[in-house]
Amino acid sequence: MIARLRIFGIPKPNNVSTKTYLNTAACGLLDEGALQQTNAFYQAMLTESSTASEIVRDKRIPEIRENLASFLGASASEIAFVPNFSYALNCIVQALKGTEKVLLFKTDYPSVYEPFRINNFDITWIEVEADGFTINTDVLKEKLLQEKIDLLVISHVQWLSGFKLNLVDIGTFCKKHKIIFIVDATQSLGAIEINMGDIHADVLIASNYKWMNAGFGTGVMYMSESFMQGYPPVIGGNNSYTIKDGIRQYVPSVRSFEPGHTNLHALLILDATVQFKRAKGVAAIEAHNRQLTQQLLDNVPDDLLVGPKTLENRSSIVYLKADKQLQDYLTENNIVVTRLDSMVRVSMHFYNTPADVAVLTDCLKAYRIH
Image (cartoon, rainbow, N blue to C red; front, side, top):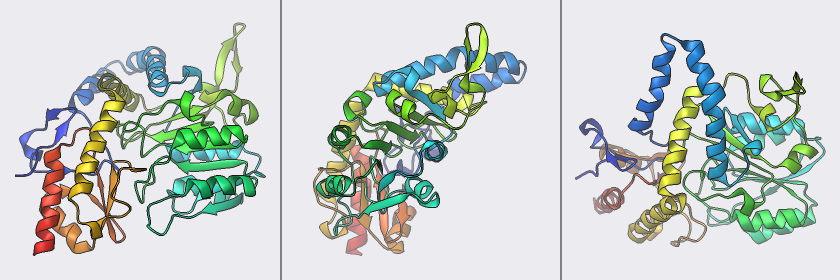
């Protein structure tokens, strides 16, 4: 029997109960309760748009910023709400001098490296190991020093393997050697505990539609005060202004990266997910996801698995070697995953259960038998 899909621990309606959703790495599920709460905002806009939007803008957004800052172990003055990861990184690239030497990962998500390639930065590349999974952090550190790198930009969790970097280790190394450290946390924020005080990143950015379960249209950015001072923003708008000595003045800050008229509805959804994850505990979510990942590793045939059969450096994204026939077979059995090239990507989050993983592994066994 196909496992019932659950959102925030609540069974979904019967019309979707036949689906086994193992695809958060593509897009995280929304919570119906969060939607109902935030849809009240749009209802108010049917009759009193200006009042409704001003209440959210002036009262709720500062509260949401404080909640998110606490979630990240940061200060609200270090947090910006951006449309997505790509927008924020491209803005940051424009603030750089253009002469920095940058270390990038060859098969990282294109949004991480294209802004530097297009703008003709001096790039040093690191490669994935022969197993198609591992990033050798000793080699990474060696290149940082040998090539006299100014800037390391890399994803916390890799989209094409699920490999998880030790941000504390790398961040500490970069801080010691005065190397700027910029992190894409789109495939980790909301599923892996992140505390900015521990990882020493200068900038961390994430789109919210995956593991934060907050839908499209928002991203979050942390920026340290030291990075802000060294690389002040070269973009600005209404959110760059503040009242100073009774006069409205442009004051560059992390909020200079916020476009005017942010997605208020989506930020209300984000706040609902942040509050849920804080109440549940991201450490507990991470432990749950690791348990499901271990179950999958224990039951998947060795020759199908990409990477070692251990949890070391693994997120809850697991890749299986597969052809289109296997993808089609899983789809026919109502299992939602993603196929990329010659692999199938499986990704498990807090709403998944051991029964969901069992459905997948039973299908894999049946496929191999027949």
